[in-house]
Image (cartoon, rainbow, N blue to C red; front, side, top):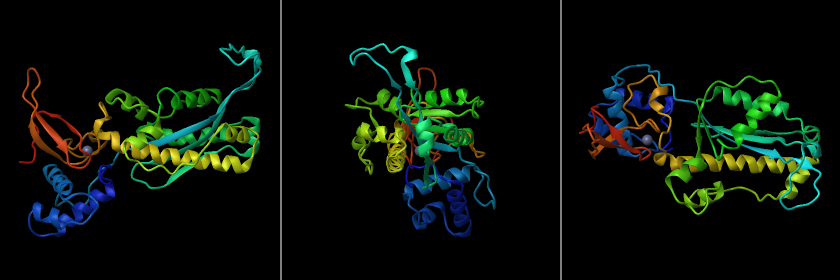
Length: 307
Ligand SMILES: [Zn+2]
């Protein structure tokens, strides 16, 4: 997919085909058929050649494990004496919140998967089994993308991990699409649905309301299935919004640091870079570059670039 990270399989295929073909890189890039642009293919071949990876049989280019995920929770149920600006005492909590469902997807993989509480678990507010699955995913991830994840999802999950005496998952970097949208743009709203609409992402989500949460809490299996479907739709939307926002993300974890190849590819997606002009700092000369895959622009110092 244009703008997405070159997978190991994709890179290996490109190298194999380039090694088999006669002629120069430009002619090869025009001939080569994949869903990326000629410009992107040419820049990637150039980048691989500079790294000495063309004309080699096997390469190791592990890409980072990027996880997209989203959770839903069941609300707190409590006794209250009114509905306006209430201060609920802890002793008035009847049922505390818990995780209701999660959905996830890996970069470079089409499959979206998830899990939701079984009817009995929902009624008992027992999310231990659910948390186990989520912990394993986070433990495998290098980078985790979520909407409002910094303030909500990660903190909620951590609270439950601690509750069940889990150790922390292996370290991962967090990309929060809400924080990104807020910091670089002035959208009317930074909610996922609005960002999807503004970035031209098609949504396939079903409508939900508080009634659905109430039925899930009561253990209604049809409602639980509907909730999971809603949750799965959310993660697909998140992935597409992230891909649209990616070239705008400041301080995106540098993809090159997760790869065993020379590090002058696009730090955001691993695509090839081309020189687009000067971009000096106060004290140093530098060039600005653009990624041929995702469109990221940035500054580089003294690296070999396409003429
Ligand atoms: Zn890129």
